[in-house]
Amino acid sequence: MILITGLGNPGDKYTYTRHNVGFMVIDKMAKNLTLQTNINKSNFIADVIKSSNNLLVKPQTFMNNSGQSIVAIKEYYKIELDNIIVIHDDLDLPFGTVKFKIGGGHGGHNGLRSLDSHIGKEYIRIRVGIGKPNSKNDVANYVLSDFSKEELNQLEDIITHIIRAIEELKSSSINDVKSKFTLK
Image (cartoon, rainbow, N blue to C red; front, side):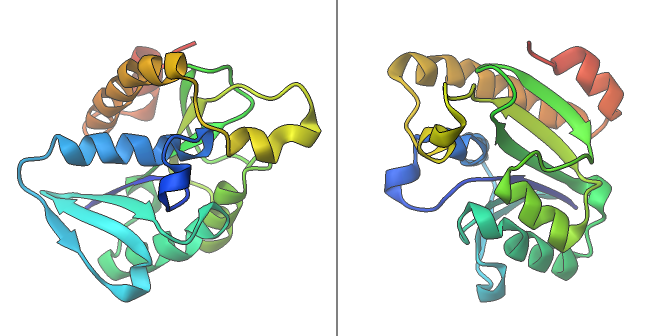
């Protein structure tokens, strides 16, 4: 079983925010599925779709508590860390950049901080660059601001690229995926 989670915040007002790029990837993946089952277990605190040997997950705990959802799902399905893929926004990468890695620090990202404290750090990360504000004081407002129309148009192709990379991750090494799918 492979757990693929996108980080984000629940609620319509967050749908197109920079912090929700992980949710956007999961939504597009789910839209492309022909056979899927919605899993409804209250302790998951997440939207969970099962398709074949994959779980597509959108934690509904808000970003800062994402680890609560993922640990419950991980333990229920007995999923190893190397079978967990997390898609998240990254302030330290320019908009449009996509990078892949296993483990590492949270870099101040509260969703990753929560995951690390609940499941450990050695899961697969897909880092999606959202750029950064001019001032560090504006970080919270920036990540909760909507993408521009131009950025949303560019995101369509970026999200499709990420989905192809996720498919490749299921059968290839992280190093192969890095060399083939990293966008700078």
